[in-house]
Length: 202
Image 1: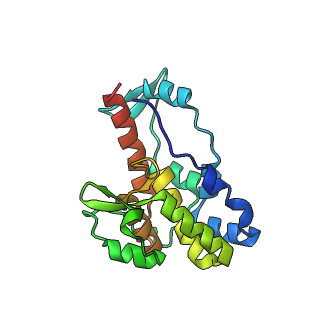
Image 2: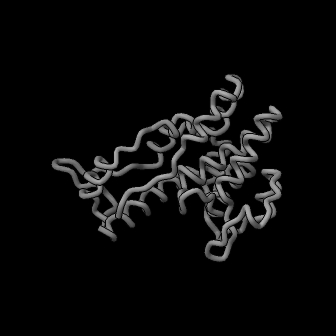
Image 3: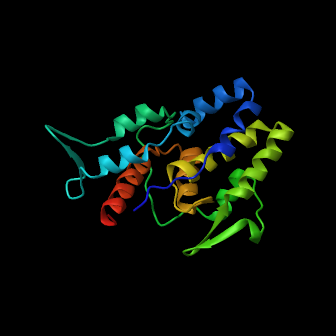
């Protein structure tokens, strides 16, 4: 399977328009998402690492070393502010309604701003970026920050389709934003699932 990813350049281009104090606040609230967008993905290195993946044991079997990413390492990497350390994200059949998600982000998408996917309607990247640019023009940073974070969640941390924000990504973000649920376990699980899918198709 070819390694693909969403192009983050349009979101990176927004950063110079965000005041420094807002960037600091964003990082405090959401962790190192701005830094993660700047990471260059080395497809050759990922492909080489994938060859050493043992899907049964869920580890990388390297010469003289077996290793596996863990929650503590991901928390350190992401530096997310976790309000309640004892509340871990748990998926339960998308029990967060779309209405709650859209109300949280103050969005009113038209049908043309959505994509029919599985049993749900996902949000198009183009729609979210339009909303983000409007919020930048209005300098409405309180509404901008969660929407910007969600867009990064959907495109970078939980990429299901190219240029589409999946409802599952929105659910993880909602539970982090509203309930203080630790999303790191979900992000780590996404890594394992991606590697598993890659191994099954090569």
